[in-house]
Structure formats: structure tokens, C-alpha cells
Length: 283
Image 1 (cartoon, helix red, strand yellow):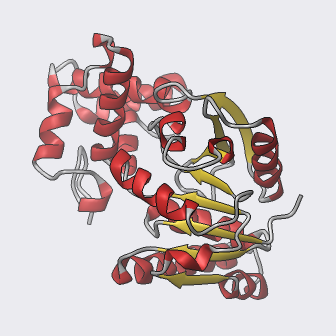
Image 2 (spheres, one colour; image 1 turned 135 degrees about the vertical axis):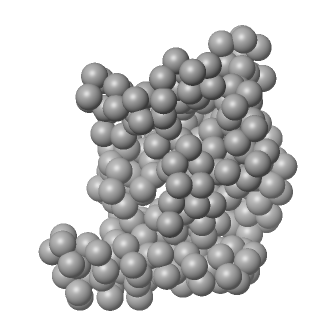
């Protein structure tokens, strides 16, 4: 099943990546963000990403140009009217996402699927904000979106089998590997990943080993491509903290308690690559 017209709300790291892969598959994409600078940066990031793929002979210059021609950046959410799929990819804040879902429900057709790229927020709760909650689903892409093959497809309590199948088919059509999971805090990816990162931060805080030693052990001993502290910097320490808080709140289990050092890093504004400093320093 081909996807002809899709919307993406949020032009940040995940949103522009999602827009890129949708457009590369042949879909017309409206990339929506209330911030003009964010839209400008998002489009520039897509151009840079596609340029690297051309340099590596992964795609041709003609394919790059065709992909770019299918993406339209706009600040007007009404531009997604007529889309079969809209993917929300904004900040991990329930109130912000809920407001966007309410706005989208008043714009798109009744049979359009509304998906969230959330990494931990309940799909079931988001679905309460729209009529026909059966069309609400999670599409959790991995970062960086153009390079990572997984899409975690998250069924809310009321998500219909028809919605799930359409999203699975579309995910496959854009070259991703969809894996269906159920709506519990952190889903699968972050329920397993984030406690590992959190424990690595505890090891650092308690002086069990230095930063580089922790990452080296996980890379060489566990065959991870990136150490957990470097990965936390890539994801964003604020995002890691937010997900740990969702897990802690959702399960009420102390094993999900965010490490105090992680809280302190976020409080100091050291969020990782996006701020130039986290557990590592970036130029």
C-alpha cells in the first residue's frame, strides 16, 4: 500500500528525518512547525542528509532533488488536510502533544491515521483527545531516522487492527522494519534501553569507573556500536530524564528512579550534542 500524502508535525531532529524518509519513498509531505527558524533548520538538515547520501553514492542527485521537491514546509497545520497519515514529532510533553492531536482531529478526514513518534508517552491517553480513537497509534522511529531501520508500532488500547495493518504496510513501503508492541510505559525499546543508560550514569556518579571506561566496556564487551553515555548525549539527556520519569511514574518501581547526576546535568543545561556538552564535549 503506497502512501501518497502525509503530514509531519515538528521539524526537529526526528520530524525532519521522518519527513525525509516519507518523501524519499514517493509521498508528498507537509512538514509543519510553528517556528520559522525550526522549519528553516529542518529543511537544511534534510538537504545536508540527502547530500551526504549522494556523496556516498547511496542515491543519485536526481533522487535527492525529487525527494526535496516533495517536501513543503509550513507553519499552518491546516496544510495537512487530505493527508492519509500525520505523524506528530514534537517535544516529549503530554500537554503539547494532546493539543496538537486535538488540532489535527479538526483538520484531517475521519479515516486519516494520527500517529505519534513519542518514545514513552501513552498512546492510549493521547487517543482520548480525538474522536475515533481507534485511528491513533504510535510510530516510534529511531534516531537518526534516515539510517535506522526500526519503527516501533505502538498499539493503544483502542487502536483498531485496521489502523495497525495500514501503519505496518506503510512502514514497510518506506523501507523500515515495523515491530508491533503494546502500550505500556517505555514500550520495549526505551523500557530496556533507558535503565541501561541510567545505570551507566549511576556507575559514573558512584566512581565505579571513568566515562571512557564505561563506554569502552559496553562497546567491546557487549558489542554495542556506541557506549551508553555517548548514546545518552546523542539522544539528549533531557529526553533520557523524561523517559525515566515516565517509567518511574508508570510502574512505581524504584529501579526506574532517575540518577541524581542525570538530573543535575539536565538542570545545568548540559543536554548532550544539541547543546555542545553532556558527558562529552562537542565542537
